[in-house]
Amino acid sequence: MLNYIAQRAALAIAVAFTVSLAAFVLLNIATDPAYAIAGEDADPEVVEQIRQRFGLDRPIWVRYGEWLMNVLRGDFGVSYYWNKPVSALVAERVGTTLTLAFAALFVTIAIAIPLGALAALNRNTWIDRFALWVAVSAQAIPNFWLGLILIILLAVTFPIFPVSGDATWRHFVLPAFVLGASSVPPVMRLMRTGLIEVMGSDYIRTARSKGFRGRSLLTRHALRNALLPVVSVLAVQLGHKVGGSVITESVFAINGLGRLALQSILGADIPTVQMLIFIFALVFVAMNLLADILNAALDPRIRIG
Amino acid sequence: MSERLQTSAPEVRAEAEQDLPPSPGQLARTRAWSHRGFQVGVAILVALILVAILAPYLAPHSPYQQSLPNRLLPPVWVEGGNWTYPLGTDGVGRDYLSRLIYGTRVSIIIGLGAATVGMFIGVTLGVLAGYFGGWIDHACSFILTAQLALPGLLLAMALVFFIGPSLYVVIGIIGVLGWTYFMVVTRSATQHIKGLDYVAAARASGATPRQIIWHEIMPNLSSKIIVIFTFEVGVAILAESALSFLGVGIQAPTPSWGLMIAEGKDAMFFRPWLVVLPGILLFILVIGANLMGDGLRDITSPEEKS
Image (tube, each protein chain N blue to C red):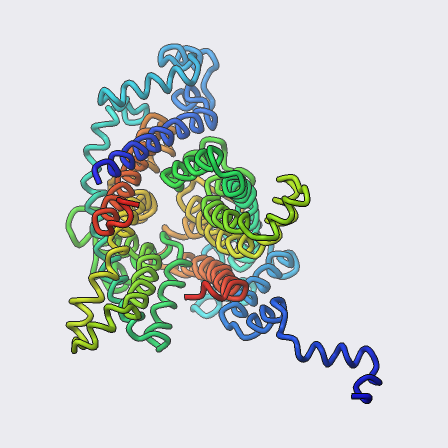
């Protein structure tokens, strides 16, 4: 088991740094960082000075090496745009994004798991078709548009929730719903197929023959096994939520990492963008690692085989 | 028996065909005709593609013509609307219906273009990894894992904005970041097909890897690739709308639905149709692609139907 975890962890770290290298190279090809600092219409002489002062005249692999060493020492660089250490910017906002991500995950669980279970238990009835319809629709709705429509309906026409901001828990209700809705289709489908499979298995037939019926059959025997794969997918989805926060936070004007990312892009603030891509990738690989570990802990065939 | 011998050849053939089980193609056609989701999806896509092609003939006005006296007119069903501008006008007096019609073009071009770019990358990597295995498989799979870990939307926003937003940049970036599904599926399908007897037969008769890939494997991947392509069109359309909405995708004055939602956002409390209409069209177009993809999967490989 430990061996398995060590292997997965090593791969995760390798992936995270590959991502940071790819992002560093791509961002530096996409734009000239010296121009990004100086502004598009800057005097070439000024640009040249900036290039030298920030060390941007050195080859890209030297600069990546420097970035990497700094990150490993805990120095996340300084934002060009905000004139602050990137670590301070991130620290101010990370709590907000995590709150949003976990609230969204809660929404996903609250909708997708009961809906998937109901669909599986009432296969080929209107409930099943309704659940499928929800999944198909949720996949096709533009996330940001759903946010705007909810603002129009539930913040303006019926002023139940605040329009935007992140001051109280009420501010998080609509954004969490929007962000959570995007994960409903995969989780719901997995719950449905998982439970259908479990309900058709031998041990459920055995349990039935022993007299288990209805609720106790479901909670004591079926759900427990159907939920196993769902748990690890939820971990992966939590990683997606942090990445998906970019749109939701922009729509609802929530000052988290996602909005910081958009503002840094619009401000051509490459060190902040680079660091945020790295952080989002780290969260993603960490969540996948967690999913792998959960899978292995719950299913011995994986860690042994 | 003698009567039987005297029947002419075409009749015999017709009789023989009646006895044969239907061919896979016939089965697929039968399933297609009875698959309602597929029919709805195809109908939506065909209709919207026609709108995109015929935009100059359908649009009552130019999508770019501004008319300041006629700015922010409501649609006909709201008080103050008139039939000259059936869906009203936007903040600088451009006809909203015409912009919505031309917006179909932007979405469909980006959807098809980005899915094509993604298909080339994903299928290439998937077939190489699946066919050759070994270190090539490990390398391609590592690229896949890294790509999955990239925050796609964030990187797409940064790259499109830094390179300079244009239609081709948006298509290229969304395509380059959207190939993973193609690779995952073609890789495992190639691994499966590679072990089948007819591939062994081709190899035994001296076919080179290139011939095997092109003549034995690719034809059998095509139905899977078309299914994924259909889904990826929808994904790319949503990605473009998000980029354009955030201001880092298609730029004004091009009529992109995502951009139109962003432009209408400031006035949405009093003129909600500015936000509602482009969003509904996005939803219809993407659901059309998804229904068609679901349908194609059910039709071409019914054993995977859930």
